[in-house]
Length: 572
Image (cartoon, rainbow, N blue to C red; front, side, top):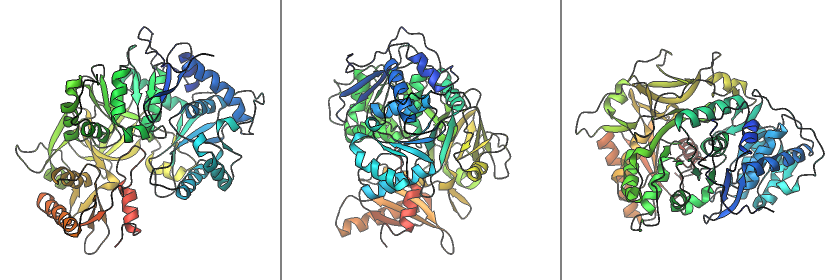
């Protein structure tokens, strides 16, 4: 038996095919002819299993027939609990060869609870119309209970699948559904994005050939969850589509020991790795006072940014912290995208690092114009350029009447291209709300263009409208966590609620202990800062550490925090 406890090679001598395949199954068929593959690591950063693409294909074909032996029919949905392990990877590709529709789903959160999680996955499984649920060995009992509550035909781990019944595997076409991607987590009925093979492969071409311009010597590393689009497409399906080896750390490993990511990048000479801003911030904070001799980031040429609003100060701190270890600020690559567009819509030019527009917040709020801030202004903020639309994709910024705005006009962003979804799964009403008959997607984001590049300023649903001003909640949040000692990014959440005579701004602040006087002083400090800096009166409420909810990519979920607040979860 071959030893799979040696990482798959980078294979820098190989010839790269840039995802030019009609389907994901054909991409794996070709990748299986080489030596590269997927490498899975433990919570301690130790290699657990290395799966060459050839072995992955072999295992997936066997499991595909076993999945069909459960009685599942081609086109049926399969709920997959997305542990970052070999079984999830095998199960996902087994679904591809079987013509089944995998729907990756989140793992339990550390502070969640069995009952809440079982109910969440039951609802997701029902929304996906799943017939099968596959989960990791460590959650076998939970999986069985979910299956019973949801009335599934099979619920278990891969080892529980019946023997190969000899079923013939279907021919997969570009028009066939490839997977079902749920959003970061709605507080209402969950909505799944249906992605077809042709859309996935179009996005993989745009990412690997045009955005990252993948080279034979490239190797990718990720800690991003595989139930999130940036983890699944960006660091499992895209690397496979261009035959690149990829190293995957469990998300929990990064959360507990973020420097494992940095160590693995250096150890395996990785060239491509992505994170939301908070990931870079966490690494810079954890490395303070530690020697840098053990880290070598000189090979890291594409340090991608995505999944949240890009913040300049934490990234400057990362450069300062890891520059001595060989990290170049020119490696930063700002990106923009969403699950409804498979993953990526734009990527900044390689090798130029972060480029930002420093804008006058006053003009932004009152006039919807991106105007350069006067020098020395205390109402200025940096917004990152996220590059032009990827080839064959289009981005427009429109006003409330639907007219396309000129450059520097701030409005709602619309996208079109071969990577845009065909619709939400079994939800024609929601599809019609965001997707026009001629293929334009209402992204729900707000931003502007400059020199053909897109700049994101926020989410339309998060925007606070007060006395004719468009106030971005992140402006309030970032002012507080940046200027008040003891607060970190992610500690502050701002939103508005209906009230008379005008809407009220609520600001939730995570407080780590302190006596009554200290806590009262923090409330006053935040209130005064927001009043003097932004001219707003806010109701500031302290909540416990870790009380603010996060999305699957680790960013603050304002919608969930607002729902919890209105439900009284944070007290009076």
